[in-house]
Amino acid sequence: MIKIKKYAAIDIGSNAMRLLISNVVEQEGKEPQFNKSSLVRVPIRLGQDAFTVGEISEENTDRMVDAMKAFNLLMKVHKVEKYKAFATSAMREAYNAKEVVELIKKKADIKIEIIDGKKEAAIIASTDLHHLLKTDLTYLFVDVGGGSTEFTLFSNGKMVNSRSFKAGTVRLLNNMVHDVVWDEIEKWIKTNTKDYEEVTLIGSGGNINKLFKMSGKQQEKPLSYIYVNSQYAFLNSLTYEQRITELGLNSDRADVIIHATRIYLNAMKWSGARQIYVPKIGLSDGIVKAMYYGKI
Image (cartoon, rainbow, N blue to C red; front, side, top):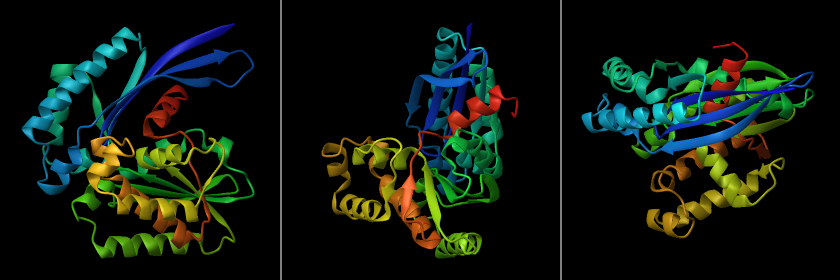
């Protein structure tokens, strides 16, 4: 007997907003399956507002309201029975975030919760990572967003330490990440990985997924440090326009992908990792699973 439940997750990031609709397939005696039914990504760059002027602009507030109305209708059409909407870095820092959240509740009937970096990292880590983690190995999980990057260290299948830093792609794009932040990240990574002989990276976020797709590799295979480094040089050699026309990148991906690649490269360098695995996971996947297992 198979039972299917429909869950939805809304991830309001600093670079884009996503609606993931997932089919949760329950079968007696088996682990539930989480199958993507639909994924909609809307490029509303909230971080541009929040990190430069400290508030969400009127224009972007209107766009958010429209997007949330559309998300609500899509959830209705898909007959979603349960959803959660989480906002991250940009909304954490915008001083008018509370008013924006209230307006969206009133106009689009979507309830948004603004979460901190620690909760964000925990939700992402609660995804299918345990299938990836070989118990005898050490992994540094790196999730790069528009406003922040979450680092989580796993060893022997267990979480050792986690930290969120205000170094995201939209911030880097606006030259808002000072050397002191890079120094802090380097120190944190080196301190937390020094006792382990070998560390492997796990990367999550839209940019590393795009890099992985461009590599043409099979899902289970990792990218090497050498490959990521050469891609970084290649992307840097192209103009913004060329990245759109020649690589087919979205306009809101073409400018931030270089900054994201730099974060992953530094994380590999400072941890001594030679490889990075790129599972298809993110905050929205984590929200669905955490909701299903009653963790949120």
